[in-house]
Amino acid sequence: MIYSVRGKLITTELNLAVVECGGVGYACRTTMNTISKLEPGSEVTLYTYLSVREDGVELFGFADLQELNCFKMIISVNSVGPKLGLSVLSTMTPQSFALSVAAGDVKALTTVPGIGKKVAERIVLELKDKIANGNTISNVKAGQLSAPVNQSNDVAQAISALMVLGYTNAEATKALSGLPSDMSTEELIKAGLKNLAKF
Image 1 (cartoon, rainbow, N blue to C red):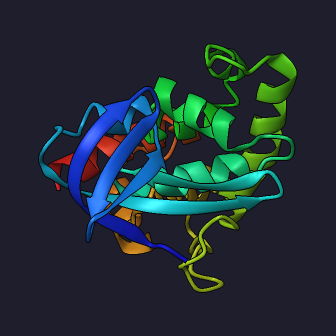
Image 2 (image 1 turned 180 degrees about the horizontal axis):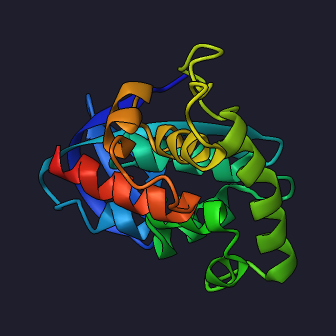
């Protein structure tokens, strides 16, 4: 498994970045969001996902772990492949995607090229539950996503959504502490992201 590649950025094309590591150029499929953060000729680090299929092997690279985690979450949806995952993250940031799913905003997802209403509804249906249950966090121990007794379901879902984006349980809890108890999940996530940006 290739966790990341680090080296000189040789060239970028539409949804492609080539990084030279030890004399070998690694072609990484990527998003327009990642490409916008890269400068040709500079040294870069891309966090990677290796896709092995019957018709070939492809390496996907992302500027940060949030985008990589979001990509993995998207392609876990039935009938949604890596190319559609790149399309989503070229159109939306991981934060805006998580907000759309948490809010059940199907219309926002249909703005992504290649996603119709049925696919958008499937993404919301499958990922909203995963975010709420914390099943997409592979590096968090079981039970860590459980909300304390005094937390509402909205707070628990907001914590889970922030953890999907790569924040720790402690960071997410701190970001949401002190917020009004009558806020919706979507409002909590937005406010939590603002607080995290301040931290």
